[in-house]
Image (cartoon, rainbow, N blue to C red; front, top):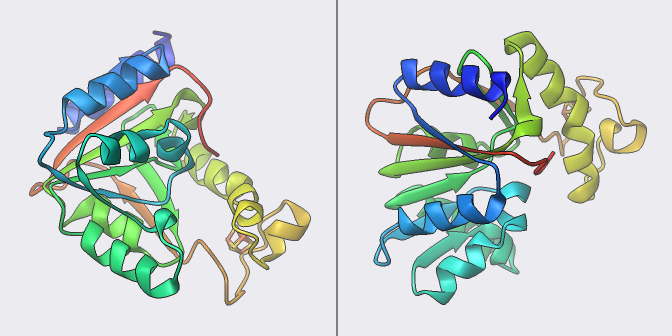
Length: 203
Ligand code: SF4
């Protein structure tokens, strides 16, 4: 583990958020699966990191009830999954940035993902590739805006950043960063654990 990861873990622990590091994504996924009860209901926020690790499929295959709107094919199904995900035993998400002084920064268009990270599910696991770690809050805010265009393109949104690769603080109807949250300490009704993985994951 490098100095930056070490600092980040120490800061998260000081902020009452459990944190663990795995060099290897497979070990991180195994740890996660071992720490989610087979009977648990699991909500998943829109996360390239969680999805790219094959976690939704693994949970479904072993019998967990999973609410993940990316698995739905209709707007109604997606809204239903987002709503149900807010009242689950476990919620999984990535994060847009994680600072070395132990803060998580996230943007959201609808707000369902950031809301569920804070209140509703009993336990939240955040999966974070080392590429998401930033020195401080200013760098985290820059990172979030500088990388937003990648998600805009992935989602085929008609936002300025999708076209130019740069944020122009738009008022687009499809603006995907209407809400920005900074988690500075563990939300006190939610168990909270950050799994840091020694690999580039997500945007
Ligand atoms: S404010 Fe608009 S242009 Fe900037 S990142 Fe968000 S959606 Fe893109």
